[in-house]
Image (tube, rainbow, N blue to C red; front, side, top):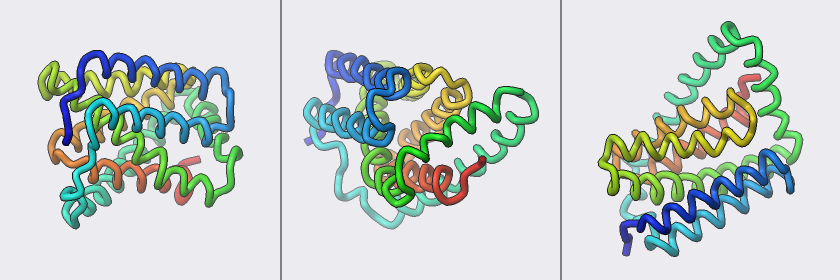
Length: 207
């Protein structure tokens, strides 16, 4: 049974998310893909512990999967446009985007694809949208909760010291948060996130 997250559980997991992102991006304690896999797994486990299993099997249907596929394509298009204009406007855009793609050297293509498809993407959606945004929308209202959850998702990426990555995360948080708000489906968000990350990191990188 899905329960509404308590304030205490939300604050604990938010703090832990900042710790994980600090260790991953600032300290660089472990291999990036291993570190993010651990973060996604732990945060998802805590979300389920605090509020019950977030994914309802009835959500796994053709409609939600199709929404996820289409929205992944839309988000990729948004990033393609943003990538082009940011490199025209900001002199630091290209070096920062290049540094983001450098993490691909920390794993093999197949391994990275599997991690993105089955660990980090599902884990992040279950935690950030299915748990944290659900808590925020219940506490602050739908609009304010959507904005608050996206702001926190963007804020943890500030620890990377990469402006382009932080803005990219914030935009993605707004996009998937809106998708979750309007569809009520975490499955659509998981499919969208998984396909988008594999597309932009592995299949059709923008650098």
